[in-house]
Each structure stands twice: as C-alpha cells, then as structure tokens.
Image (cartoon, rainbow, N blue to C red; front, side, top):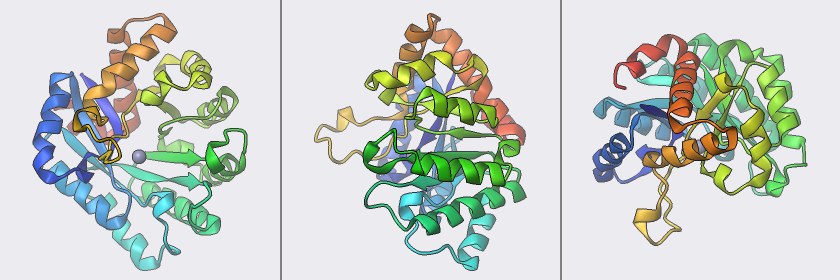
Length: 270
Ligand SMILES: [Zn+2]
C-alpha cells in the first residue's frame, strides 16, 4: 500500500476522521503521517494517531506559526511530544519567507532548535521551504534552510523536503545532503516541477497530499485527502515511464527507510 508521508488530517472535524482513513484505505493508502503545526496542534495529531491504527504523527511548529521566539518551555514541550511512540517524524518545521510570514530570525532559530530535538530522539525531519510570494528564483528561504541543514548535519537524521516546489538545481542540493524529495498534487499543475520528478533517483522519491480542511472549496467532495495519493503516483509514473505499482513499491520502501527505527509500527499496518 501507499504511505501518505505528509498530511494534516487531524485538523478536520473529528467526526470525519474515520471516513477519511477509510477512503484512504479504499484507495490503497495504508498509512498516513499527520503533522502538527503548533505545540497544541501536534498534541491533536498525536491524539488522532492514538485512535486510528493507520495514522501516525509528526510533532513540530510550522514556520508560519512561529508567533514568538520559541521559549525553553516550548522546546521542552516539543521534546516531550517527540518522545511519544506515535510520533514518527519531526514535522512540520522549516523556513517560510512569504510576505506575511513571521520574523525570519525567529523562524531560523526555531528550525535549528527543532532539528536538535529531532536529533535527541533520532527522528527524521520533514521540512517546508517557501520563498517570498512564490518566487522560485528568490533564494532567500532556500539559502537560510540549506545553511541550517548543513550546520546541524541534519542529513544524518534522514529527512524530506515536503511539498517540493523548487527547481532541479535546488533538489540536487537537497539530495546531495541526503534528503528525499516529496511530491504532491501540485506536480500535476506545475510544469517546472517535472524535471525534478524525472531526475530524482527512484530511491529518493516520496508522495504526500499535505491535506488539510480546504474550507475555501465549497464542494467538500473536492477537498484533497490522502485518498488522492494515486493521482500523484500516476503523474510520477507517466513522467518517469514506469507503472503506478512501481511508484507505489518504491515510495513505500523509501518512506520506511526514512522512518528508520519507527518503520516497524508503520509497516505493520500496511
Ligand atoms: Zn504541511
């Protein structure tokens, strides 16, 4: 089965959880990693993982949610969450330089500190890098993120550039540092991503949906959900001239390699 390596399905109304997981299972998506975006939200992700066998959690504070410098107390809370058995990745963490994003220095400190927490617990990191105003050629977020990833030797922890939207030269830098590249449905829309989808080695590709409650879409049936993973896999298969089955086998294997010592509990539900 597929693994949706990055979603936020715990943010949906709790009475929807069982149906979302069931629709995923029917689409051959057997495990979902739902990532927290604040300390409180990470606890909700863990709560959902506790009540659904196919759901696992990420703990972390998203760069756009860094409303103040993370305090010693915040970091202690995150570390306590990261120690829980349902937490399989440190996520969602990263760097976001869009116009209205929080203070860049706070973000950089938080990214650095959360990589250190991941190291304490031997957790892989799943990170977000977003440039100002979706300008893929503005390298400011990329430069900051790369320097922090290098400084902390984060490649040793294993990790993934989630919802990757950069270009191939950037993907290459991340691959060289040891990270995976994760694709979402954006691959079906953004032509410039195709080169990366084609060139990334088969053992470094992951799939995800990044699903969250898309309240801006009036038709609930059109909200992205983990059940949409096969759409990403089909696009990857057609670009790479391979089958959906091969994409499934490769991406699931890659996700399990990424998860390291946490792979066993995830594999057991597939
Ligand atoms: Zn996300």
